Image 1 (cartoon, rainbow, N blue to C red):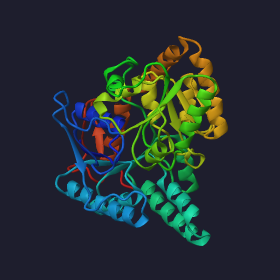
Image 2 (image 1 turned 135 degrees about the vertical axis):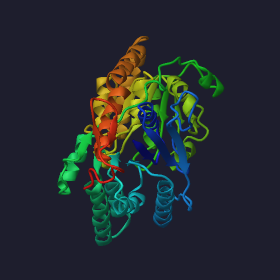
Image 3 (image 1 turned 45 degrees about the horizontal axis):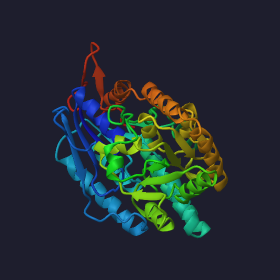
Image 4 (image 1 turned 90 degrees about the vertical axis):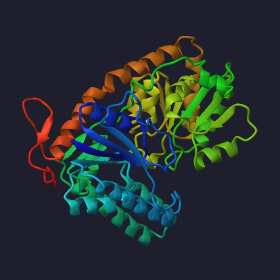
Length: 422
């Protein structure tokens, strides 16, 4: 198959899937936004990668203005135009849309329909709920209701019209049912992390030395996006509560953007807080391994559909996790299964987590044992061959392919562009 796998965010496990599909003999163009600042995966083709793999960043003809409704809308529409131009330059059997912003995907959905181009929605977040929540916080009630109705119609149409939907959790099915959307084209595949790229390592490594991290304190680390779904001040609450219990600790935050800037301003002058920008993918294992305990955050209004995938990276490198998240979030189950701590995203929750950390740190082997347990859980769940096979079958069906004699998929008909369209 000729696959356009487009992950707007450029995250690690999506890039790993692109490599796996290419290794199976498919021609894969992995696209991502070159303007979106976040922690990226390996987005360059290396000497060991399959010859059928390409990776290309897309640049919109408008700047990305993240927190301006008008500026963000202009960017998203310009981004859709850039993606459309890429798709028109060559033929693809199927397109995968992952993490693509709501209005950009709305324009692309109409393009896919006009071109009868099969596409798969890899649904990572219900964006309309976030947009509606923001509108309710900032707009008069009647206008906010209008915005909510409009964005829900947009996202519902995306789910309805996709040739197939890959949702990352069962709550998505429930949301589709509330929208009145049938789910016979929906499959659930939880997110994962690339085990071959994120591996356990030594706390005292070259990255930690280069950052001049002191060796004595217990290192508490947050690595990833600090956006509107997160309260960065909880990180300081956790650190302060930990130190109040007599534990020598420091906080290392690897992030960029408004949340990281706010945290840096709030902790200015503190020797026990270090805010560092995003790090290259090839040193991420060392970055995470330099910590003793990792932190995940999520605010209550984002809890049902947003899953902090950073937790999966934490598990892969074999580090215990404190998750300050609502109890019903899927990552809470993962953290508990690995022996970590789950507490509410509140000051009381941070205090509870500090008590857990102080108790665990008092036992010399406890953190190491929890790290081994975390890595074992990741190895059990993050089998890329199994996951790759699941995606290959979904893409083949969406593209109108058929399996013959247990071998590679072949075109059911020339072009194969009609199969699976809804």
